[in-house]
Figure 1: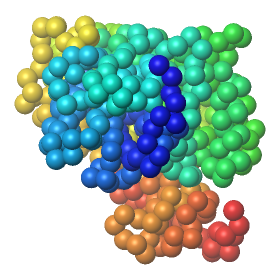
Figure 2: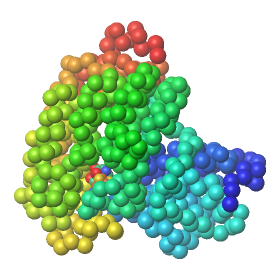
Figure 3: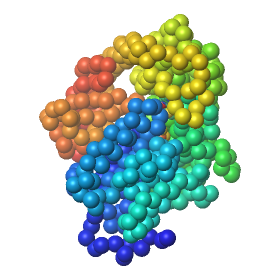
Figure 4: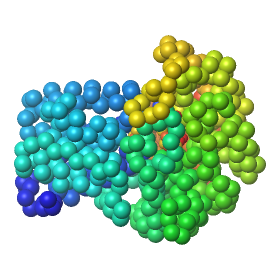
Length: 457
Ligand code: SAH
Ligand code: SF4
Ligand code: F3S
């Protein structure tokens, strides 16, 4: 069935999208807004005003999946009062559960997966016109990746997906199951998108993928992330190029060199190690040992001493002993991470380790998590104090949430900086002198020279 906007009612309808999960989902939701815009849906920020509610779901941990059912519970009540309200569920839980969601939750109208976003308008129209539930899932992305319309949620900083899927098979992780095999977009389409972003005033792009450091291995000719960064880096109007998430094993020298040499590439490396113990890493099937990771960090820091290094860490992986857990704590201190996302291991469907013996009791996992977070907090605090007295370049994102006389922005190393200023600074690159620092953020004062030039964009 084809999308024919003329079949729709003339008056604009409104869509509200709730996005759970990672940056990939955020980027996908921007495509959903773009796609639904083409059949006459405008975005609303208030779900009470919506004609269509879309839930973009995450399956990474049980807690993330539970959120899906609690959102749908609330939306179900809303639908009882507003029977024409349509509800669509997409993303990673939808990809995993598929049609069964329609039976489990009979008031859901549309289920679509991670590989057929481009079909969303058709599926919504089909459910509307045929007045029935519709589910469609693809096992893989289409051979020719469709270029999707997009309505971005920020006018400053843009997500640019460069590679989809993940070819690793970490024993705890559901992502390969719900996101499929790696598939890179061509450098030509990525460059075109970045040029358009620069032309519309964007100053920052984040090159996105579950495994961006594997970018380009499936292209002909083969290229790597460093080549792409050099290419996108030539776009002068883009002041900051970021990338997320990298896998330590694929972070080859050519990528590190490109980040070092390309002026607008930011020196922030989010390269999750997951655990600080070799036996655990092996059982996670991560494909490297702690020593390899430490050498990688040394390599980065020898070229970029001020680079920030962040990681994801899992505690309570099945069979992880107390001593092995303490290796992770030690690693945090040895490496001195700028920040870490931490999580208690959660057994997931379609993963090997879910059925292993030696599952760590919940109470023990949370005790480990609490302890690890406390250490990470101390280390972050120590690192952030190094910024005291320094002048840093800040891209101002807008007014501070807490205090309207302040603005908030980020350093190239992705540190949050708050300082006195007004909304006219939004979207400006300014120099800020750092006067205080804690675990989560830096505080400073706009430098005099920056005050004079702040209005020149
Ligand atoms: N591709 C990235 C991470 C993707 S998932 C990488 O390989 O590093 C984001 C994070 O979720 C992971 O880094 C991991 O720390 C966490 N995660 C994944 N599966 C998990 C599980 N079953 N339980 C707890 N945390 C998990
Ligand atoms: Fe999951 Fe591992 Fe792939 Fe990361 S590399 S998405 S943790 S399977
Ligand atoms: Fe979650 Fe899917 Fe991202 S499982 S972390 S939304 S790829």
